[in-house]
Image (cartoon, rainbow, N blue to C red):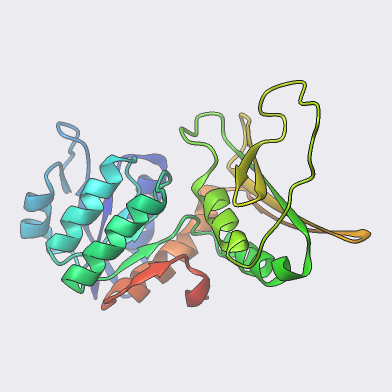
Length: 249
């Protein structure tokens, strides 16, 4: 049995993940890590007590950044493998996690999106990117999402940018600031925030006389659970850093 816990266990994703781990075959849910003063029975608000008493093999992190990075680094130092589902990590933050993994020999999986359809969307877009001249990403999340662009959009842009150079069409007159979105490695990234949404992302690749559109739409947060379970099972004895779930599907 894989002993697994959840950081951010009282949040929307943390609550779902705790339930999924508790009912999954071959996994034992051993408790949640939460903010100071908010722990219910079976939860911990101190990572030392959590590790000492719950003995987790894997910690799934759905806490808030930047607290997430501290939790992840602390877990690695204590011999606990991590699955990172939290948004907000930049290149420097991921470099710190990579360094901790290399130093400790304790593995980590960075999963900016755990929906298997979204993972495949990124994989397909990366395969297609070298055949096109320009790429734009449009991501939509619920109004309450705290960061923009989303972790999925940033991860997608980084992967696409690594396949070659892309040029954005020049706009000589910008009538409203931000109209063209963010520029990530020559890739346009646009963030929409609307009530009633869970998560949606579209990658638009432009070539000579054609457009390829690859879109994924999560209708429920339950769509993330198969990927979470896949990552937990893969992380059990992991000794390296894995960037995304693409290599696991």
